[in-house]
Amino acid sequence: MLLEVKMAGKSKGLEKSLEQLNDILSNLEKEDISLEESFVLYQEGMKLLKQCNESIDKVEKQLMILEEDGE
Image 1 (tube, helix red, strand yellow):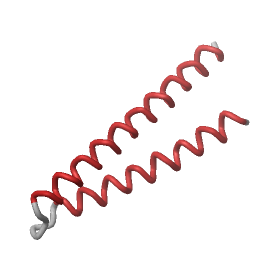
Image 2 (cartoon, one colour):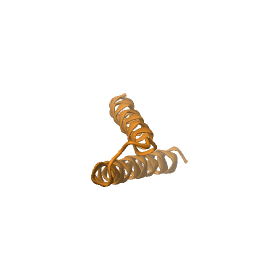
Image 3 (cartoon, one colour):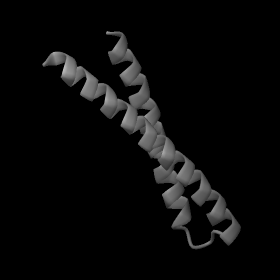
């Protein structure tokens, strides 16, 4: 039960990060964005992408542990 709550919280955080990445992409696609703004958005996007990858890796590891325990 506790693991389910933790994973649900991570899922919400991951979903929020993915939404933020989508917003960043939308802003980067605008024609009136300056080079400086593009660079800042790119940096923010890369940080979010790294966080998303780390979250996904943690969930995958937890799932592998659960599968091993179930066998």
